[in-house]
Amino acid sequence: MTTHQHPTDPQSLRQLLARPGLVVAPGAYDGIGARLIEQAGFVAVYMTGAGTAMARGYPDFGLLTQTEMADNGGVMARSVRIPVIADADTGYGSELNVIRTVREYEARGVAAIHIEDQVSPKRCGHLDGKEVVARNEFVSKIRAAVEARRSREFLIIARTDARAVMGLDEAIDRANAALDVGADIAFVEATQTLEETQQVPRRVRGACLLNMVGGGRTPVLDVSLAEAMGYKLAIVPGLLISAAIEAGDAALAALKSTRVVPPVTSSVGQTFQRFGADDWDRLRRRFNAGAPAIAADTPAVGVAPSSGRGA
Image (tube, rainbow, N blue to C red; front, top):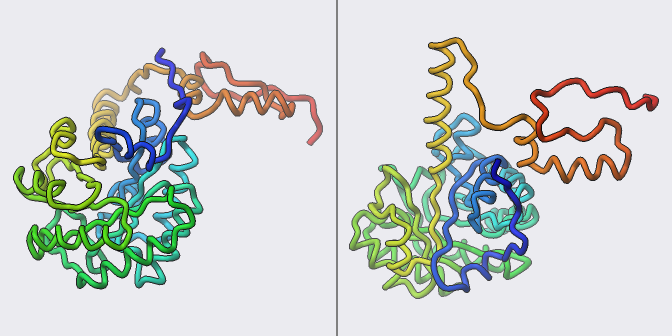
């Protein structure tokens, strides 16, 4: 069995971005995915808004509330020790709503959020039919976000979807304007050619994020190429949700056709270990908290023997 451990010395996102090279943050939509990303050795996690919406039964059409999104960010942040970068859509209203949004995500332990310039309700950045607000409204929201944070370790990412509506030049101008009022990272969404993707880090006066979406508008899906172009942060939002859907479809089809539960490679105890069972068992023993620890080779969940303590 592979031993999965937390990093011994996790760094803040600002520290990670100060190092040479590219930070890659695969996307997750719950605590399970966040743990898998950390245990695979990645140094950051991205909370995908599309995945968060789909996990609640909705498409990525801006249907979730700020509270639902921030709460999910908090679940993921408490599940790992590495930084969580989260989608915060349009900021959920005016500058006042943006201020509250920043405070809610920051209070839940999220390391960074991105706020975009789409008209609310927004659409997935790689779909048609997007609309954007005026540049000055977007910049004002970013300035409000920057001023609202309580710590400089909480990063503000300015996302613009203007490429699809107004062209690349306007998108780059918006990114630079957002950096001028204090945004830490610029996110020009859905560049449509290799040349456009290359232009962004050349023309934007600050750190740039690249959104790597399989089947999306941006043709760059090679992390090494993104790094060579000069990007500092790459998110891969759809990786785990696509894998989960495909694996789930296959497992369900196998069960339906064979009527046999497929075998698994890990015991119940080993699976629980990946989610902190050893730490909780140490606490159980320290406080004599009833049931005995669960051995890693436990074949199934059973009824724990009585502790002999009164109700």
